[in-house]
Length: 318
Image 1: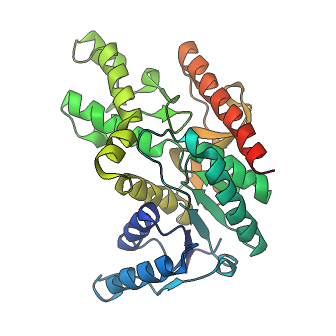
Image 2: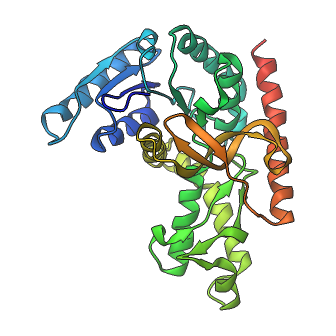
Image 3: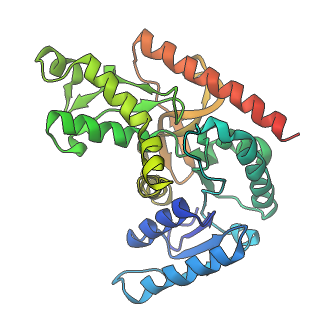
């Protein structure tokens, strides 16, 4: 991957995609940006709107264009946020048939372009859709990355920080498994500036019941946001920007993203949210944490839900 002049292609110019792109522009992630959408006017309109930043920002970029799938050929990173939005009262899993078909069409065209870079996917249900994309393209699994539970974990840290009256960046706590209802909070590995969460429980500063409630609130945060404003996009936009930064700059940052398991935690050939090292080649390795038996059991149950849903997705693609 060339590092001097970088090109990012966004597929899907809805609120999530444009929130990511706006964040990426402000953080100077790349020099060239291309917008692709099934509705050409959406790509053109957002390109024109975002182009106004070129004359305002002190440090900006070279080009931003509304393009076509052939533009993926020489891109370093393709970010996919396309898909129908989640409806009020609907789970991410409920969206699988429609979005699997959309992703198959996208995956086929990206592969046909001759693209050789890294793909980052946020389309929901993201774990299964990431599996669909890799299945259809046959791309190196390491070069296909899902947004996983990076946003879920950010929500968890924020809620814990509020409870303990510390800044969110002081909390190291993560959610793994499905980006959705069956996810698992790894409280056994959670710390606040190096101090185990178990110590805070012993000191009476927080209870296990409160931690369980915090996990539940983090998992259901998207539903709450959708009920109030119909969609979520700022949090995931910034999250995608963080993951993209580690990819484009080859940071080897450990993040909880959608990576393919190959025996870790006893699970194989499945993308889901796990700790993985992220660099210019996508995810290079999965870090298997020393979690409790109870957490491992819940994680495997989450993976079983995803495996069953992926099977349904493949049926929908026939």
